[in-house]
Amino acid sequence: MTARVPGTTGGALETPSIGSAAVPATAVEVAPSGPVHAQLRAPASKSVTNRMLILAALAEGESLLRGPLDSDDTRACRRAMRALGAEVVDTPEGWQVTGTGGRLRAVPGAVIDVRLSGTALRFITAMAALADGPVTVTGAPALLRRPVGALVTALQALGAEAAATGGLPPVRLGGGGLRGGQVEVDVTGSSQFASAVLLVAPYAREGALITAAGAAAGGYLDLTIAMMRRWGAAAAQVNDSCWRIAPAPRYMAQDEAVEYDASAAAHLFALAAATGGAVTVVNAAAGTLQPDAGLPVVLERMGATIARDGDALTVCGPARLRPVEVDLGMMPDQVTTVAALAALAEGTSRLYGLAVTRGHETDRLAALARELRKLGLSVHEAPDALEITGGHARGPARLATYDDHRLAMAFAAIGARVPGVVVEEPWCVTKTYPSFWRDLQAAGVSWEPAG
Image (cartoon, rainbow, N blue to C red; front, side, top):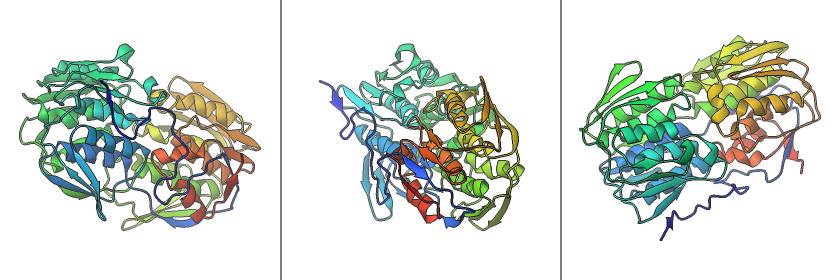
C-alpha cells in the first residue's frame, strides 16, 4: 500500500492565501507610481529556513527556529520532515522541531510529495537515503522536469540505493543509510546537489570526502557549510571545492533565528532602481552568506546608490538606468531582476554565466527573451546569456510568468515604470514571498485585477 504525505496532492498549485498576505487570484495590471519611497521588511530566507529544517530534523534534541519563512516551498519541506519522523509544531516564537538524531523512519511505501519546491526535492532526496525503509520523492508535474541525476549518482557512490529514470524525479530510495567515502558531485546543474549531500554527510557511517565539480553558485555551498558547523558538524575545508565531513560529532539542537531573504530583498531594491526612488530594507543584516546579497552592487553599476545604517540597507535609483555587462553565475536567481531593469536601461546590457537557469522553475532565459520582446525590445538569447537592448519598453503588454515566482516579481518592477503591463499568475509568489503584492501596495505601487 502506498502512503502519501498528508496535505499534498501533486497537482498544480491552487491560488492560495498564506498567513495574512492577500494573494491576487487573477492576473494584475501594475500602475506606474512615480518614484517609490518605502521602508520595508524582507521576509525570512527560504534558503536558510529549509536548510535549518533539515539540520533540526536530523539533530538530537528539540530546536527552535525563530521567525522562519512560511511559504509554499518551506511548507513542502516541513511536511517532508514530519513524514520522516521529525515533529514540527508552531509556537509564538517560531517552529519547534523535535529531531530524530538521524534515525529516520519511513512509513511502508511512503511517497513524499514536495509539490514545486526544487530545494526540497534535492534536500529531501538526500535525507530520505537515511530512512529505515523505501521512500519515493516526487512533486508537481512542473517539478518532474527538474534534474536530479547528479545527486542520485553521488548518493549511489556513498552507498545509497537510489534511482531516477532519465535523471528526473520521482526518485526512489531504498533506505538503510549511507556508507560514506569519497564522492565527486557534479554541480553544473545546481549547487543544491552538493548542499544536499553535505547536509546528510555527518550521518554516513564512515564520513565523507565531498568534492563539488563544475561551475555553480558557490556562495550557497559556503552557506551550507557555515550552518552545518554552527549546528555541531565537523566539516573541514580541504580546498575551495572539497570538504571532509566526519561521522562525529553530529548535529545538536539549536535555538536560532532565520535571517532575511536577500533574494526577496532584491525585488524590493529593484522597485527603487526602476522608478528612481528609494527603498530601505530594514532587516538586511550585514554579513549574510546568501549570494543574492550582492545584487545591490550590480545596481550601483546601473547608476543606483547604496547606503547602510546598521541592519537597514537603502538603494536609491537613478533618474536614468545605465546598461550593464555582468556575470551572474554566482547569483543566477537574479537574472530575472537584472533583466527587468535592463529592459528599462538605455543601451544594451549583457547578462551571462546563466546556463543553469534553463533548469530552474522554467527555462528563465527563454522566458525572459520571449516576454521582454512583448515590450518592443530587442533581446538576443545565447546558451548561457541574454543581450537586452532597453530604454524604450512600452505597453500594453501581458507578460506570462510560467508559474515562476521570480518572473512575476521582476515584471512588477517593469510595471511600476511602464504603463499597461499585466502580470499573469501573480499568485506564484507564494512559493517564496507570500506578502509580495501586499508589500508592493505598502510601497505605493498600485495594482488591480486584470482578469
